[in-house]
Image (cartoon, rainbow, N blue to C red; front, side, top):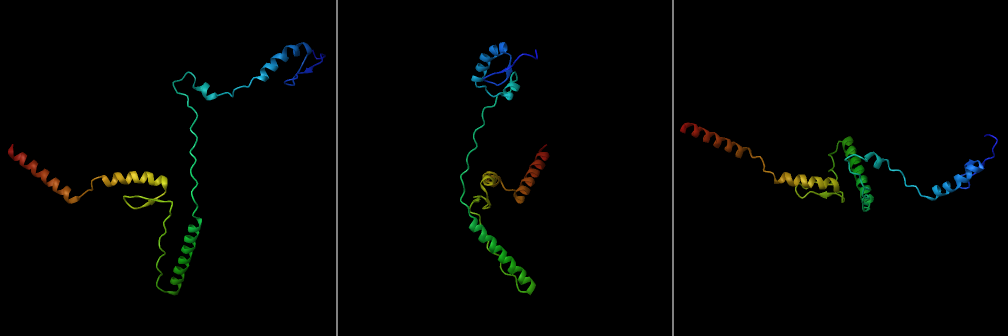
Length: 163
């Protein structure tokens, strides 16, 4: 009825009539004392299928902080700009071109023991395995290949004469 007086619940704050509030009170206290587990929709979706449930993913590895070589990079950059200015000045004045600046190597790069090229860590791991396989492969020698073909042709010719 619209003329009944409503009283708020001490736990949830919702308003009820006195007779309903007496039944609601103990139930509300019981419900609010329990800690609800968060609902896992993935677990429910996979329930009844053959797909195994996936556990927690491993924590990403913390990469060590590398020492910054910004000073070296700055010096290399300034030297490159200076040599470019000298180059353009020599072209304008008609003088012979100055020698190019010496190449600089990044200390963070790893050198391939097979081809002596330099790569960052992840690329070096991939490349060194690749380069190792490439160097172990036999080299194509056109003279050797031609000799094999000639000897095969001779063997076939002799076999056909014997028949």
